[in-house]
Length: 162
Length: 284
Image (cartoon, rainbow over all chains, first blue to last red; front, side, top):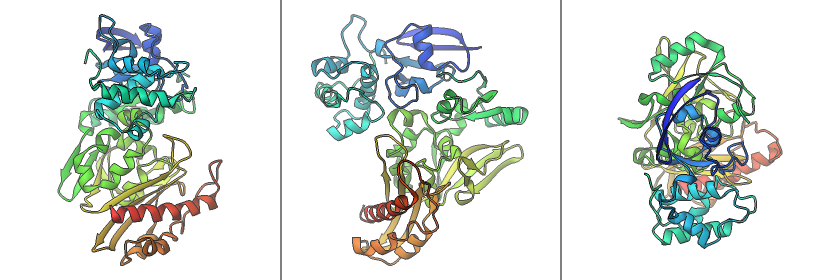
């Protein structure tokens, strides 16, 4: 067992974990943060995307021990404390940027990262920026529209806690 | 899927990492960004007893100017190298290749040295590093040694790094003012290339003065297309000027056959992509 201490969605947590435990397992199984989902389990689909120290990562491809001392933001930490959605979350709702919704947490987390890097991306830049996120429903058009909508609203800030 | 159980060490210096390697030998596996290693462990294709995480060694991170070379620390993440102004100015071929490497999330975690040490023949960094004549600096129990890129890649997933050594940095000779292009052919998004061509070209008044060409996935290691490089010198930087030289791209290559294409298809692809890459590099 290895002791880890990190900040997740603004709260400090500390746990003994097996070194082989993946960050996504830690978030879901230890912290109950099931908003972050496991899609492909092969680091292809991006459904498990979270922010680690301010940049997007696939949490199925990071060990919990590697996140020791870091700050993690999940989809559950994006909205304001009073429940006001993050502008990117709002844009996905506004533009119906989802079909079954399974890829949505990862799509939103990657979109927030993308807009932080590039506040007014072209359609091609959005598609390239989201290439590590797969939508099994193939509902990409509205996802891209949602990111464009969010960009138009000036949704260039990171997570609320950041 | 969850990896088999392993012990974990996260040394904070290269010396500590080397001591751990010396002590545990074959049972240990070094982890850089983990973007290739963790999938392998999760699929249980490998089950080391000890994982030595290099992620806490700050001295292995960063890009610096060292006279006639740009030096990239082995643990510098792809996203950092890809957006570094020194790399863009003096080793643009590397920046161009990183744009096409995996996806944004993987580029945030994956490292320059980790990808090179992994030595996947379909990896995107081997060809540009080889083409630019980089040197790889490796630390071991007896100090550091420098390995030229052409000796670094030994075989499929095999490099000149010894079992008791750690890759610490990569010295890339400056190619200031050279045009660069990485032409990557993929079937679906964010995948390894079926074939890719890394081209750096120096032109003088519309004529190609020097060219450096690297090939990805055209054999068990990245390859230099020496025949193309020689044939390009003195040619005009036009479609017709480049076509004949590019046709030599697969000379001496031994590409694999797989579901994405057989060896002949890859040989053809290499000539087409070389033509495109050289033209774009010369005109860029």
